[in-house]
Amino acid sequence: MNILFATSEIAPWVKTGGLGDVAAALPAALRQARQDVRVLVPRYPALAAAFPEARPAAALPSLAPLLPPCRLLAAGADGLPLYLVDCPELYDRPGNPYLDSHGHDWGDNDRRFGLLSRLAALLGQARSPLDWRPDVVHVNDWQTALAPAYLHYEGGAASVVTVHNIAFQGCFPAGLRAGLGLPEAAWRFDGVEYHGQLSFLKAGLQLADQLSTVSPTYAREIQDEAFGYGLAPLLRHRAAALRGILNGIDTAIWNPARDAALDYPYGAARLAAKRGNRRALQEEMGLEVRDDRPIFGVVSRLTQQKGLDLLLTVGHGLPHLPAQLVVLGSGDKAFEAGFTALAAAHPGQVAVTLGFSERLAHRIEAGADIFLMPSRFEPCGLNQMYSLAYGTPPLVRATGGLADTVVDLGEASLAEGSANGFVFADANPHAFWLALERAARTWHDRRTWRRLQQNGMRRDWSWKPAAQAYLQLYRDALAAKR
Ligand code: ADP
Ligand code: GLC
Image (cartoon, rainbow, N blue to C red; front, side, top):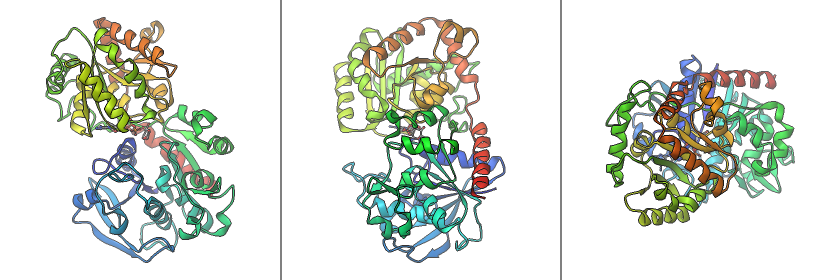
């Protein structure tokens, strides 16, 4: 099958979160399953630098009143073909793909992602300038979710939208409809209109042939008002076309036995070597080097979604548990200040690095004892799967993909060999604290701990099962189109 995978970020070049990882690993897994997948992504500076040899594949005139002319360049990364949208006016700028240096949305995100969506659809249509034609156009999150609208009103390939985070929807003033070249007939409650605005994500969820999100639990949650950010009624209406497919992890990059960022490679049968990474982490982060207390680890965007306000509330109690804490993250200024203050109050026991570092992320996954994700909502979450693969049992709130991957330690789950971490239900500091206490206590029980670690490490977290599930999704989209 021919599949065009359209995305606003792709690791390792442009990554703000899990979508970047997915956009690199899922197409690769589908190619391994012998499907012809190609990725469409803006030519941000990092991609221009990574692929200087990219060659022109097509020149395109202005496709709508508000969209500048652009070129498509073709490049290849490790056997994964990429189409780079070359439009310097919109994409040639430094920094985050969505935000300016003050943390505000780029003022022209409507055009930046309007163009990306328009092109994703065009490449799936008879008038595409390329010889290669996808059967399915697979788009991800709001930035590409307008493509199914063009395909619906103009015809073309079957379409699939995957929701990685429903909190971001891409809503813009109504005038944008004509500016992006969508027909007047699209301005309906069952078209692209959403409370008087043009919503990219709503348009995709309304008009795509099939919908998915990144875990079975999140697929159910977003049909509920508490999680749907206004889109729950539409998703209930389209429930028959919606499914949850759990993400995988890239086991070539996240494998403790072959991780170049680690000083001491290890595996399920060689767990003793993990201790070297623990000591190295304590030294690197300026924690007291001692092995009489567990280290809790966090690698995260610092936002409300991630529930880290709960950690800030109870954080001062950690040294008394006793436990140590390492945090790597960046995001909301208030969270950054809160964690900086927590570290300053507990030198040697709490260490915080603000910023984005792949290398340190790997070293925390390996060096910490327990990985924390108290998320308010979590569509899938990749870090808990990385930590499961690294023998670092996760402590998570029961939501979304966390609920689908982490099995709480209990007598029954331990006996049947499924227990692999700690799960708490309510998003309040008390419930979180009880879980932290329970995990810290269990860590001192070496035998139980080893079983928890090995249960997590022995499960297959790779993309293989997900790739098969996406193939079925594509087949169903094709059938729905006919
Ligand atoms: P989300 O996409 O909501 O941020 P995920 O758990 O799906 O959550 O994915 C987050 C990805 O981003 C992981 O690969 C994680 O390691 C990475 N990440 C997040 N913050 C940082 C950071 N400060 N430094 C390095 N990697 C980070
Ligand atoms: C989003 C979600 C995260 C998910 C990722 C990749 O950023 O917040 O839970 O793992 O997308 O699908």
